[in-house]
Image 1: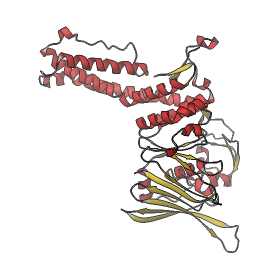
Image 2 (image 1 turned 90 degrees about the vertical axis):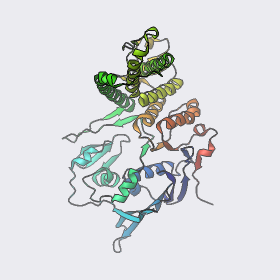
Image 3 (image 1 turned 30 degrees about the vertical axis):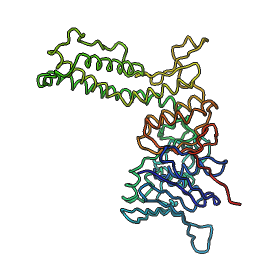
Image 4 (image 1 turned 180 degrees about the vertical axis):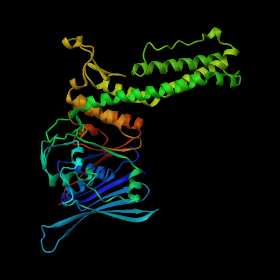
Length: 449
């Protein structure tokens, strides 16, 4: 299932937007002046699919619609009811309507969380929101913006992040629909990573970490997991090798030339794995048979032996392709430094220029400029943190990027999304990002005069 179109009515009380997604090229670019709702359209879509409904409470709108390629559509309607004659005392409600050709029409309503006396301000759920730090019993500070929030404001803005507070469970038809499409938002603020830390005392504790450092550590774990998988299958194949050798039928059709061709292909694959840090250079790769020693009696052995090696190395296939593309893209852009990968260190940067820094063997990921960090973080997100066939929402990809990098951004993005099998919906102000691909764009219009 894919999204064909999203639309909104009454955004900020004045805008009506319709955004058809470019399903053929799998990249859609939203552009328009500041204040027209580019970021809001992304956040609303992300909020719906990830059940973060606070964005709908905080964003003035009448309704939001999503049309899918199977002719079904979702409408999210924001309603207000007023108590008695006091127009200031209003209750808000979201109604989610699904019109599906298979299941028919379904509806689900969510009421905005109210201040019930049973809600305990000291509930630990409030300390699980990584962007916030509790600085007193009833006040919190946003780690990124510095904004202060009261207890009521946290309930209003982050209620969907408080599992102990939400009593309304989504119906099965809604959870099923959401499970069919993964949506991930990459925000404009992407250089800092929030790590939750619960404390028994209400003191401000900084848990903001550099995202490049967090992702470097995450890559170490990815590589280790893959090496563990490699070790498991290697042990299994090595243990069963004698049995399979005895049971193997003769293979007279296998020629020496075919054997040599397979050996060369294996060695090329092994070389690539060494280059991206998945295998060590000193790993024994000596082929046990030389062409003069290959005869009919050894062909059966070689057939199983080569097949086992191919199975072992195939474990790394997808990861190696992503690492190779990441390295190629980064090294084509970064000036005077190159990226490599290490099983113990993750990202490894080597200076390529003559200066006092050239005496250093490597640079830290945090030594990169903000533009370099933005590029690395975005590419890593797309290649390693997003599930295949997801819709990725990218807000302001041009942040901190040199014009030259912006010019090549779309071409690089197409390579990445093709390998990772992703659809992209992004919002940008930059014509340098768009280049000559205005066919991929949707312009948000202002009020009709």
